[in-house]
Length: 292
Image (cartoon, rainbow, N blue to C red; front, side, top):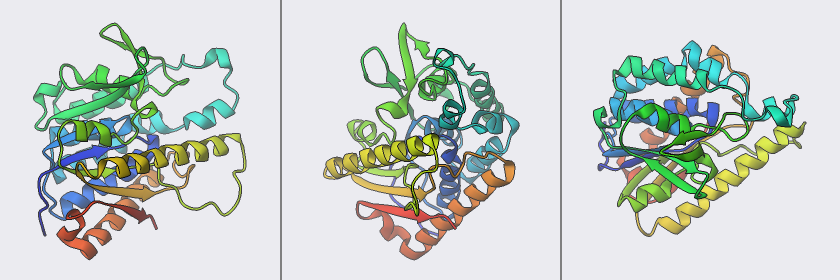
């Protein structure tokens, strides 16, 4: 058991890879890592972050696991957006899929936590979306959680844009998939980030269009995070944990698959914490978690 200094936790986006993020969070609390002082989240990281900001503890993480194992979660992530597009969705159909499944998932989490507004949270939470009008991040910090979370998770071309305060919003991952910038600009001096777009080495070429686009997007977003890390680590101590997943690892959403991803991430994180202890947080670094 050990305690690291209080810090901001940054939870990146990655769709169904958010299950790996849950496993990392569980291992952190099981090891006795001190709860964060604030949370910044994008897309699925915002969904996970809202539950942890409500109950920043192992108990809160176990509630989050229950959310991920629920029918609403499986409904939201059962079809990967890129696979959906590649399977024959026409251009004139894009952006018309209802967000009811996402809303039901948010409501499921809120039913467990009993919290529906930013002001009720136990920790400050910043939810990052993309302001389509301005072409830059939009950060929500107050008011109702639901519109902010819907905006942060509005995948371009799949879900309709979300209008908040007379402005159109899309998924925060478009501009800040691992929002280190937001945390540093908020004045965070110590950051623990869980970034979800690290992928294993390919043994062969992608087998189809959807897999090619998935690999390309994964590489782009991961290298964006690496660039931000190099630029910002002089302003803040930044530790990034990266569960390594294949681009299509979570395309098949079954209960047993989700549970396996969460457990593999928990075990890999626990091993890293056992090996490094509190020394892990003394210096900036990026740590890749190989999921067995």
